Length: 584
Image (cartoon, rainbow, N blue to C red; front, side):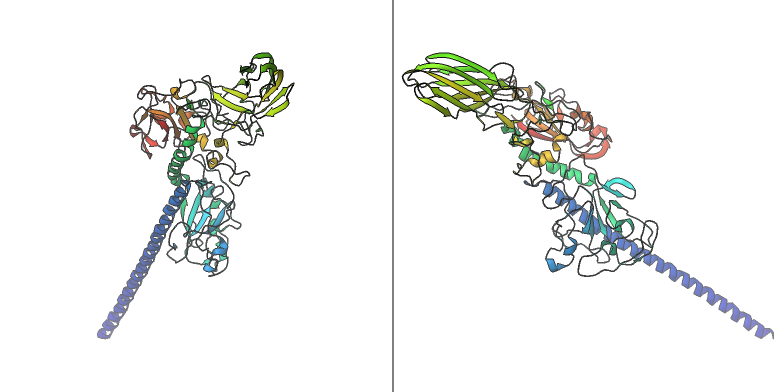
C-alpha cells in the first residue's frame, strides 16, 4: 500500500515539475519572441532613420546649390513633391520634382531631381514628402524667402515648426479609429495616382491636406516615421549661397552705379551713395542721408518699376516710394552760350518740381556755329540709386530768315559734391543766315534720371521681364543687408575718390587687406538672440561688434566663423556674413 502511494506521489510531483518546466519554457519563449520583435522594430526604425537622414541632407544640399545658381529666381525654395500622376514609370517622370505646389503639398520624394537613387524605407516603400505653404514654388510663380522666414507647418502641436517633412510610410495596414486618427483600410497599388491616405496615418493623412502633422501616435494606428526640415536646418546653407550671389551679382551693380565715364566722373573715378539711416526695415523709406556712411542701402524709388516712368504709389504699403525724391531746386536754370555774337534775351522757368525746365531767348550772329547750354540742379542724387534716362528733351530754333529747326539735344547728368545732380542739355542751332535774330526754346526733362534696375523686384513672369537681380528685392534680402562706405568714396570726397589703408578706409577684422575696404555689406543671418523681427534695433540683426561698429580701427566691423553654440568668449552664436564691395 505504502509503495503504491509513494509511486503515485512521485508521479504527481513529476507532473508538477514538468508543468513548471513547460511554463518556464513558454515564458522564456515569449520573452525571447518579444525581445526579437523589439529588436526587429528597432532595426527597422534605425534603417528608416538612416534613409530619412540621407534624404534630408540631400534636400538641404540641393536647395543651397539651387539658391547659389545665377538665374535662380526663388533661392531657398523647396522642390515640389513628385506629381501624383508620375507614381509609376509610364510617364517617364518618376522621381522628378512636380510642377505644382499648393498651399501644403504632399507627394513622393523627388529623388531623381536630387541626384539620388530611389530611397525606400524598411518596408520597401518609397519616401513621401510634404512642403509647407510659401516654401514650394510652382512653375511660373515666385516665393518670398529670406532669413526672417518661418516654417509654416505645425508639427506635434508646435506652430511654425517646420518647412517640410520627409516620411517613411511603413507597411500598409488597417488603421483603427483613435485620437486624431480616422479609420482607414490602406490599399496600395502599383499604378495610377496614389492616395496618400493609403500610406500615411492620423493627422498626416488629413484630406484635403492641411498644415498640421504629427511624428507620433498610438502604435496601433500609426506607423509613419517622420524627419523634419526646419528653418534652422536650411538657413546656414541658404545664407551662404545668398552671400555668394550678392558678391557675384549685386556688388558689380553697386560698383558701376556711379562710375566713370558717366555722371561727370573721369578716369577710373567712382562714387558710392550715402546710406539710409538704420530703421525698422518694414517701415524705412530707405532714403540716403548726406554724410551718412552706414545703414541701409539707399533703395528709395520713384517709379512703379525702373524704366516704366509711371510713378509708384506712396503709402504704408510701399514706404520706399517717394515720387518727389528727385526734383528741380528752387534756383532757376542757367544759360551759357558759345560763339554767340550778341545774346539779346533769355528767361528760364520750371513747370513744377518734377516737370520740364524750359528756357527761351534770342540772339544775333554772323554766320558762326553757336552753342547753347541750359543747366539746372536736381536733388538727392547721391542719396539714392539712379540711372541716366534716354529722355533728353528737345530744342526749337526760329531763324527769321531760315525758318524753324527742331533738333535732338545732347544731355548729361553730373553728380555734385553736395550729393545733387546737375542736368545739362546742349544744342547747336544752325548758323544764322547773314545778320539775323534767332529765337530759341530748350526744354529739359524733369525725369533726366530714373530708378536704377537694382530696385526692380517684380516677379520673374512680369512683362517686360525684370533684370536678373530681381530676386534680391523680391525676396527682401535688402531688409537684411547692412551697408557701409568710406567717406572718401562718397560724393563729398575729392575726385578722384580714395581712402587711405589703415586710416580713412573701412576696417574689418579677419578681412584682407587689413583696414583697406572702400565699401562693404553685411548680410544678417536669421535671428539668434530670440528677438522678433522686424525691429528698429540693429543688434537684433547684426552680431557682437557689428551692431556698434563704425568701421574705424577703434571700432572695426568683424568677420567670425559661423557658429550656433552659445559662447560669448568665442563670439558665438555668430551668423553675419561680410561681403566686400570694393577695397584698396
